[in-house]
Length: 294
Image (tube, rainbow, N blue to C red):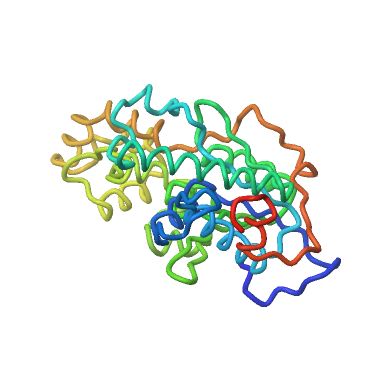
């Protein structure tokens, strides 16, 4: 399911859920725009300004009837309890920069509240997990869903009803089941197993040494999942079998780290996420409306 830029507008819009990874979009705009963009108090507001502008473009492009923008909560995710090095390689800057970053996230939440857009956060989990839970409910109810994020973990959610749109430059790329298979060599439902073998440097998750993306994809494509793969170690070339056995514990920890949790304690009545507006906003006018910028 792909939506292009030429969707019609009006009351006859097809029903569609748009799930935006709030922290990913904020990080992207926070780092892309100059800190010379300031608010009424003189503090940098470039992240909030860019987030609002990017969100408005997404809304015009995808014209959703249902909308949700999950964020990561302040407390660490359960994955860091399992693996303390998880996502620890992401510096956030000086004390002052961290304080300003957090202040701008709060400003984004202020704007979303003003617009009546829900931005759920579930303690101990990540925005990915909230997205996974809501995408699963939408799939069960035949509601087409677009996920906006640059996080490849979300590719495991792709199916005939769920598309992941990854922003790139001024545009982006739609990830369908066919594209995931073509690019990664496995079906979306096997993507987590692929990552468990090859690791993910961006999250500080080490993979199996000597098992790169191509070999990992071949192994998963042939065996389907990790349990079946490990049951067939005796049939593999000795070097591969030895590596997989040596790092068995790591692999099965990795699958817990990279698998998106789809059962969470959050509202799943999709009518709660129904959203529409007749207002024509710009980033500047919205920030002015909530008193953040003149």
